[in-house]
Length: 488
Ligand code: NAD
Image 1 (cartoon, rainbow, N blue to C red):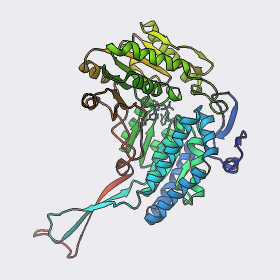
Image 2: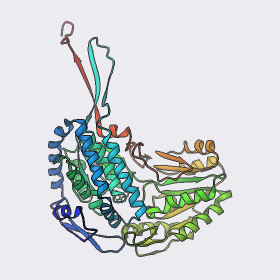
Image 3: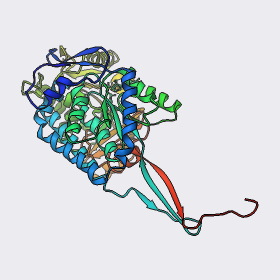
Image 4: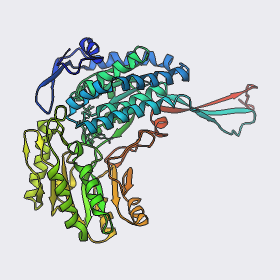
């Protein structure tokens, strides 16, 4: 594998020897410059089979390792990641086109996932329960699921991988991780390098880089017991179908088209600042970005003006080499998708208040007004820096608009009245909702996830980690061997 020079350092010798697959090499280019970044041999279904078999073989001994040792590996991994975060961050920036602020946020989060996971091994893992059978000791305990297959997208590769890898390992599982082929290092190699140095025993974490074929091989491999998928709703449906036939447990964390509601009593400047951040930061390539701005008619003019002002002043450029606010769209295909949704919406009657243009992969932050609910800018997840605005008259109308989506990942309501904002927020059908804050919010200790087409009810983080990465076992014990009445 060959890597273009980055800040010389710790990861380079690892990358020089890294052979994550036996398939054809694939060259990865920086979206911001088009320059070659790294060439990585892709994985094959055979590589998945070998990695999963090794993981299954290594897992029982790891599950039997003391809680102190498992926690220590996770804490060491956090220390190693922190020690090399400047270097590791350059890979995130260059593979994904993220600005410094987004990269740092993701890194803080990645470390938080590790440290939070380090607390899991020492937590109680079961309960004593009453029994109708006299003299029976009855307990329910959580046991590891075995091998977790983790499939992750490119957009926040380190944290979306770590929110699976860290808790799964902490709770005694092994992991086969498949990052998106566009982010082989930030989503894959750095995990192997960090955990190897942290002393994780051989076989427990394997990275196989590749696309849908490799992902499907992970889903169907008999040695993979649980699949944790984060990505688009279309690919999630396919993963769910494959796993369903095999009766395999699967977590699906999918797309979003998130409602950002501004009531007539909101602080409009604050709402516009939050709305701009939630739609434009990281070029809108965020699952819980604000996809639909639902604004009271009486404040809509001021709100749109404030949003446009912010859109105009955002600077676009190479986020690794320049001080900019936004980087490129990740690739041509995604650019065409964003552009197509905006164009078709304008043809359908929406009006461009700002943006709608691009130079290469750099798409100007865009504000669309006069949007109606049949237009693609309303119905589709755009995954680009576009803020479609619709207006309403009553809170009930706002609620109906907010819930007018097959997705249900995140929502937000801006209002000076906490009780009014909360009353509305709690009726938005989404896995996460915020009053006087925007939709792009996460913490390692909360159960992250969505409703409807945003997932299948699974969650990441906090208590949900136990549900995702362990399964219940009922165990009973009696002193006196039990017998049964005649004729038994
Ligand atoms: P994607 O679905 O194209 O790819 C995601 C991952 O799935 C990649 O690793 C890809 O190689 C793999 N994959 C694709 N087809 C597959 C198949 N048939 N079987 C198995 N694996 C397959 O998604 P993307 O375009 O890379 O990412 C953007 C999408 O991810 C958006 O829809 C976004 O909302 C969503 N997302 C959701 C969350 C969340 O937590 N809900 C977080 C980040 C991104």
